[in-house]
Length: 169
Image (cartoon, rainbow, N blue to C red; front, top):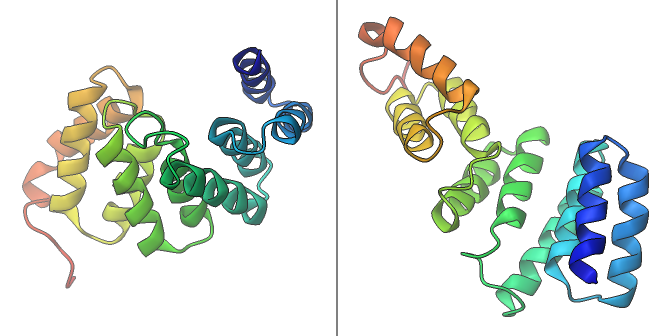
């Protein structure tokens, strides 16, 4: 079935065997050109290979299919996350923030890397209050995430220095 094939492609991605996952996803896309899942996951394979232009293409294609009604965003927000992560790597911070926030809006409980990237962007932008809101939401949905726990521990240890939004600093 298509789900079995997608899971096989995801399995190869988790083993860092991206070329093999791309072959599997490409075959699925050849047979099912409107499947937003396979198109999204091939985007992640290219993302992990650091081919951000191709990743962006596939994430946008998957997102277009979602917008055409092939799937609901609240069921499948991965293309938003993928675009947010890709734009982060391409240093397009505004687009990264937009897509990471869309991913969180549609699927707040699916944490992956979207909270981490958004938190990092906001800290680097010296938007400490906004970063703290992201961290609080992250902990709300994934209170055992090691990254979130470490960041929260650091935050608590320097909290007196982080009061306020330092956008003008």
